[in-house]
Image (tube, rainbow over all chains, first blue to last red; front, side):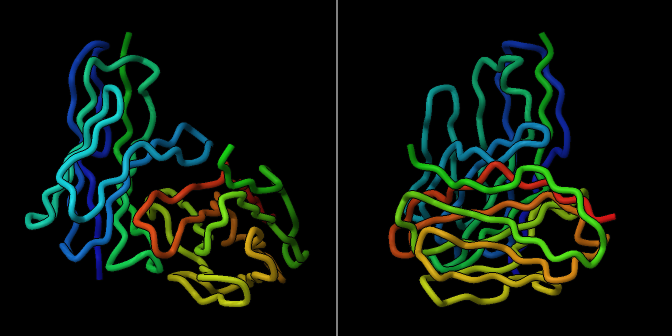
Length: 113
Length: 113
């Protein structure tokens, strides 16, 4: 059974720092991996999707990498801002498009001005 | 704008009173699913559908029903809600055969008293 772990559970950094959020998964047979952002009491906003054949994806200040063989993904946030404060969730989809997303429990990020 | 729309956003109800949470997507996605999010447990899939009239159980289906009469709509039905169904619910949709991102609704916060 696929399990997804995110470390750390919470992180507090000063504004302007570059930071890395970690996601690990137990079964490397994945279809894709998706990073989401969730603001308190709100929905999930998709940040980046990495297909199983890809190594990384970039969007603005965000860069996500994927190492399938080691079961790891990282989300790199450059020059963090207070507006980046949120919970970041990692989810993997196994095998194909008709399987569920399996989520980690998230990393709660606080960026202090 | 591509979106998944859930209604209502907030709902307080009493034990045993049937309720329906609606979900609609405008992206012609085949795959739709419902998740619940609970503190310490993360997001777990309740039910999913791969197309019209095709539905199946996820990890935590007890106490829930769904239907898929039209491609765009996927309502979640609680026939006799109980307090342990108090949770934050999310509807999601994605393509079955294209390796692209899943979209999530804004969430429905349900309280059963």
